[in-house]
Length: 158
Image (cartoon, rainbow, N blue to C red; front, side):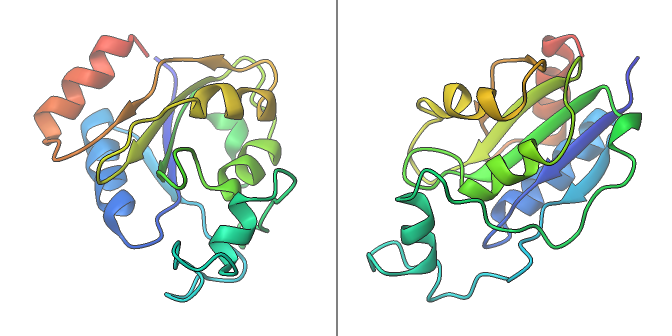
């Protein structure tokens, strides 16, 4: 069995709580993807077209800098990558994370938290950021229990 990592970005804490539960259910290590410059409430105001998050999401080349690097990525064979859904896709910091490591031969499983939207075309947008990775179909997690997450992980065969 490959060593498993749950890496996640959480703006408000919701994805962080879900990631911690998933890590426990999967017997995985946990790593928070933190922006070098933390987001403020004003940065996250999606109704403001000039907010930091709006500007990042409207710029396909945007790659917010990550504050802390995971030094032992080579140890992991399976990486769950979690994030809140922003503008029907992953925040651009997830692309930064994926482009920061060599995922060739590793299995990536995306997961997201969202109040209402699904993953949409998120996986196809993220795939080019991790060439050579094996992708499993992701899932939006809402109100999951440790038991339901354990069943999901087992169903993936990772």
